[in-house]
Amino acid sequence: MIQPPYLQQGDTIGLVCPSGAIPIEKVQNCIQTIEKWGYRVQLGATVGSKKASFSASDEERRADLQAMLDNKNIKAILCARGGYGLSRIINELNFLHFNAHPKWIVGFSDITVLHAALQKQNCSSIHGPMAAAFNKGEAGAIYIQSLRDCLEGKGTKYDFVNHPFNKMGLVKAPILGGNLCMIAHLVGSKNALDSTGKIIFIEEVAEHHYNIDRLMIQCVNAGLFEKCQGLIVGGFTDLKDSAADFGATAYEIIASHTAHLKIPISFNFPISHGLENIAIKQGQIYSFEVNEEGGNLIEA
Image (cartoon, rainbow, N blue to C red; front, side, top):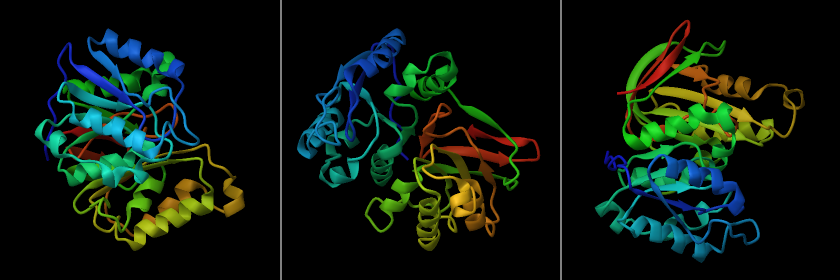
C-alpha cells in the first residue's frame, strides 16, 4: 500500500467539492483552521458553487478534481462535503499524475467512492471530517485533531466503550470502509471493496430501517463480511423512520446479519455523519481489539 508523504509546514491543501455543494461561508472556519496549522489552502472552482443537486456539472466537477489530483504542488485534497455525484464521474478520472506524486485525500460519505478507487490504485487515503465539521466548536475539536494527526503522521489510537452487540477478539489487518450505501452501491463494479483479510467499517445516515436491511443483505450476498477479519459499526444517524416501523433497530438489523461471524465486532464506534467522526487511514494496518471493557483501534 502506497502511503502519501505526510504534510510539512507550508504545504498546500486543496479544497474541492466533487459531489454536493457547500456555501462558501460554511468553509471559512475550515480554511482558517488549516492556515493556523501552518498550511496554505487552494480553493477549487467547485467550492461555493451550485448546480441542481451538485456543486457543478459532471464535467466541471471532474475537471476540478482532476486538476487537484494532477497538481504536484498540492500535497493533500480535502473534500469540502459529500452529498451525491462521485459515482457519475469516478470512471473518468485519470490517476497517472497522481500515482507519480501521491497525496492524501480526505472525506467520507459519498467520498467513499473515491476512497474505493484509490484502493485500486494501491494508495492509502483518509476517511475523516470534511469542511462542515470545522464549524462544531470545542465539541468537535477532538475529531478535527484526529484528522490533523493523520495528515502529519502521528500514530493514532482510539478507545471505545462496550456495547451489548460487540463480539470479542483481536486482529491486526488493513482497514477499509465507509458509507454502507456506497459500499453496497460499488458491489459488482471495478471499484468494489475487496474485504479479504481486512477490517471493515461501516456507517450510515438518513436511511429507512428497511433499506439498512436491504443494504446489509446486498453486502452479505456479495460475501463482503465473510471475507473480512473484523467489523466496526459506526453511527447510524438521523434515520427516516422509527425502529418500531420495521421491528428492529439499525444495530439489531446489522447484528442479525453478522451473528454467525467469528470475528471481532464493535458497535457504536465514533465514525458517523454526526459529531463523532474520527479520522482513519484507509488501507493502513491497525490492531483492532474488542474486550469486556470495550476495546481499541491502534494504528500499527
